Structure formats: structure tokens, C-alpha cells
Image 1 (cartoon, helix red, strand yellow):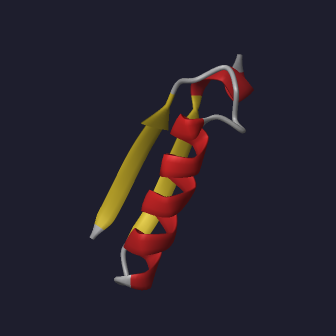
Image 2 (image 1 turned 135 degrees about the horizontal axis):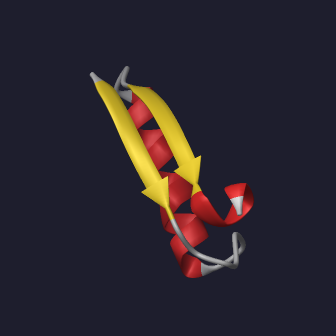
Length: 43
């Protein structure tokens, strides 16, 4: 399955960032294709 994650948090090293990393790891382990849009990184 293709999964789009929209991340919008100014601090990548926050709890939200850690949850994002965990979610990406778990979904990739299950065979899903991940596309991440980090709105703060894109400005």
C-alpha cells in the first residue's frame, strides 16, 4: 500500500518526530511504500 504522511512540526527532534520515525519504520517493515511531506522542511 502507498502511504502519504504529512508532517508539520517545527522541531524534527521532538516527540512528534520520534513518533514519525517509529511509524515510518513499522510501515516499511510491513512492506508499505512511504512518501513523506515535511511542511516545515519545505517552508
